[in-house]
Amino acid sequence: MTSNMWVNGEQTKTVSILDRGLSYGDGIFTTIKVIDGQCELLAQHITRLEQGITRLSITPINLILLRNDLVAKAQKHSTGVLKVMVTRGEGKRGYSSLGCDSPNIIIIAGHLPDYQSHQTNGIKLGVSNVTLGINPLTAGIKHLNRLEQVLVKQDIDEQEWTDALVLDCQGYIVETSMANVFWRIGNNVYTPSLEFSGVNGLMRQQVIKTLNEQSVSQNSEWASITIIENRFILNDILKADEVFITNCLMGIVPIIAIDNNSYQIGDITNKLSDVLNNKEES
Ligand SMILES: Cc1ncc(COP(=O)(O)O)c(C=O)c1O
Image (cartoon, rainbow, N blue to C red):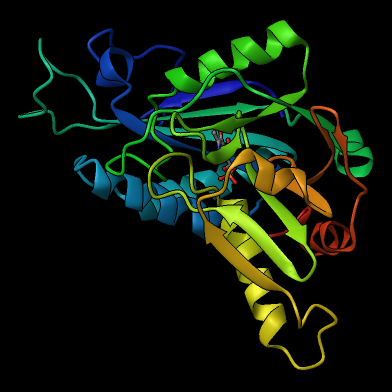
């Protein structure tokens, strides 16, 4: 996919320096994988944008037009990534959002990184020295205010890790710098609840949905698996039988080590990879 950028439908690289996305990270985003001209999980991406817009009380945008635009762009570009940002638009001086009712819709088309080796061989995680703040008001939203992830990534780059597990400032596991995390112990699959911190990823939601659907199906070999969302500390994951991380671009990626603890790539990771890696719109 060639690199291309649009603001409110117009091909351009620039937005106003008064845009509140720049001033305050006042906006939301989503990153869509495009394979063979099709947006993966497009309906879910649109729903997530809508939910983010509602939670931040940004003036609603025409999501049907946006959806059609994304479908058309995907068809033209065959394989790649469409990043969509919706900012509250221009503001005056100060935090108040009164009168800021012309959101900007920014779309960037880019290349899809090659995650084949991550998906097949797994990756090792460090444990970041940077911790995340807790705030139920913004937890779960994929908002543009990503300073914490910038700091986490600086730590990761310094340590020369591929990615790292990130805890909140109370010591609970949240996610990695760019993905949600799951682990299995026996028949239980665990994932951190994200009521205080973190991004509620679409691929995370797909994993939970898939495991729940499989466990109610009588014939399923996964029927005995229970998924548990809660707050967990580092020791909880270190005892895991298998660990994997998820996001929309990488899909399911096995974790083969956290610090000095090694893990085998497990059955649940492999089965979920079969079902969810390269999933078309549902
Ligand atoms: C910090 C963080 N957590 C989780 C995710 C996973 O989100 P999704 O599955 O929607 O790609 C991402 C994706 O970019 C992320 O940046």
